[in-house]
Length: 172
Image 1 (cartoon, rainbow, N blue to C red):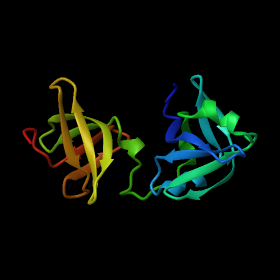
Image 2: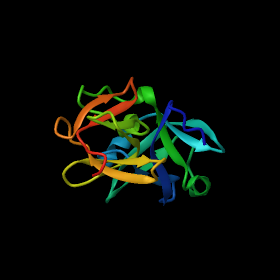
Image 3: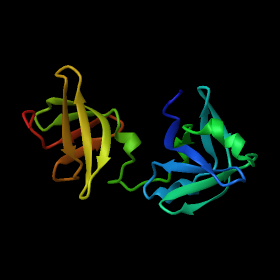
Image 4: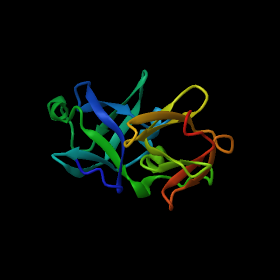
């Protein structure tokens, strides 16, 4: 699948909902219902991104359900289960100077205050208090979990330079 920087995954189709072609969606947005604010969405079909417009959508229990234009039957949804839903990068709303999308941080090099490379951001995870950077060092074959706490641990995020500077020792 082409996961170029142009497209950002925001969820996936998880199942059929009802008899009119609605589908259950697993949303990667926070809060979950934010996926409903993006239209169009793009579906990954056979390695290509295909535009799909949401005709209706709502929160249903703990999940999200949507109806796409031109999908009116549960039989049309079945082959789409597991399909990634994405948006184009330009659909993201501008964020504040100290706010970052996870997709912007993934892949950045992490260095400490002594300019020692600790690895690259492989992913992030949400905990009760704050987000945590999962930093992998492929050479050392190690993984570090570094709290993403601005000013305390994270000293600088340079998206253009491709790095995050942290107050974190290499032997932590």
